[in-house]
Amino acid sequence: MSRQSPSQTVGPFFHPALIDVQAQNDLVTPQTQGERIIITGRVLDGDGVAVPDAMIEVWQADYQGIYPHPNDPRHTEADPHFRGFGRVDTWQTGDTFTLRTIRPGPVPWDDTIMQAPHINVRVFARGMLIHAVTRIYFAGEPANAADPVLSRIDSARRETLIAQQEDTGDLPTYRFDIHLQGDSETVFFNP
Image 1 (cartoon, rainbow, N blue to C red):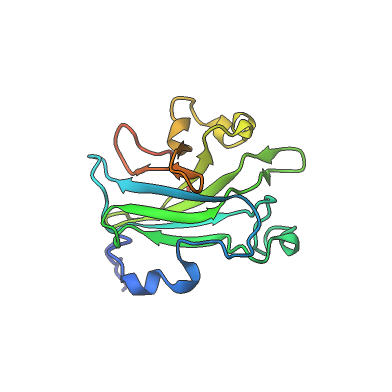
Image 2 (image 1 turned 90 degrees about the vertical axis):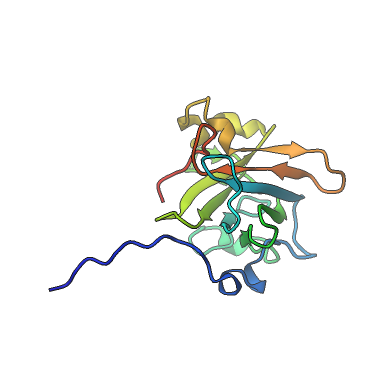
C-alpha cells in the first residue's frame, strides 16, 4: 500500500543549477530591437522583510508584442536577438533583483482586444509550496486602462502590478517590489 509523501516547499535552491549563462537576468543582445529598460525590485515577506533566496522567472513578448515561442502564432516574426525568458535571483545581492530587458509591445488577447505591455512573472522562494504568478505593467502606459487582465482587478489593488519609473539617468528604470503577503500583497494569479 502506498503512502502519501510529505509536501515540499520550492526552496532553498541549488543556486548554480537554477541560474545559468543562458537564462540570466539579461534578455537582450547588442542586436535586440526595442527600448532597453531595467527593472529592479525586492521580494518581501509579510513583515516587509526582504527574502534573501528568491528566484524570479520572467517571460515576455518582444518590442512588437510577439513571444519567441512556438505557441505564439507569429513566433517566426519575433526578434531573433531577443530571448524573451530570463531568471534572476536575490541571493547574490541578499535582497534585490535586477532585470535588463526591453519594453514589450502590446500582446493580442483575442482577435479584437490587445493587452497592455507587460511581463509575466513567476516567483519561487523558500517556504512556498507552489510558485506565485503575477505580471509587471508599466506606470504611465495608456493601454493599462483597457487591459483585459488589469480591468478585472479591484482598482485599489491594481497598483501592486504596476512598476514605477525611477529617475536614474542612462536607461529607463522601473521599480517593482513583490510582496508575498500582508497589506501590500502583490496580486497573484492561479498558475
